Length: 125
Image (cartoon, rainbow, N blue to C red; front, top):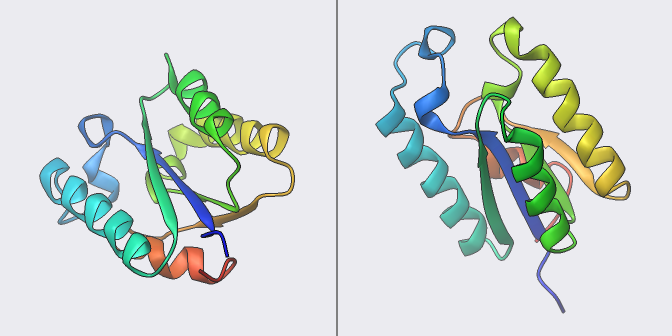
């Protein structure tokens, strides 16, 4: 049986406004993202990460990742939803996922450390 596929879309840590995430740093976030992708793989998923900037190439990068293969689930990182100034970018990415992969489940993490939990709510390995 083929592994379920997961794409995790999030903000490249160097662009994150950490004031919305007390205690996090770019280094810690990078570590969490990598660990969560590895945890998903260990759980039996085929998992990919897609890190975007704050707008210049965000949609093009996400579209390229979505077009590379079929994904059963797309996880949208918390950094796209907070702070409030990112609402427009968040909407653009959600609509891009909806158009590019209408049958794909969408989930949301609350921190970079609970991505696997978010995916499991919608897609079993």
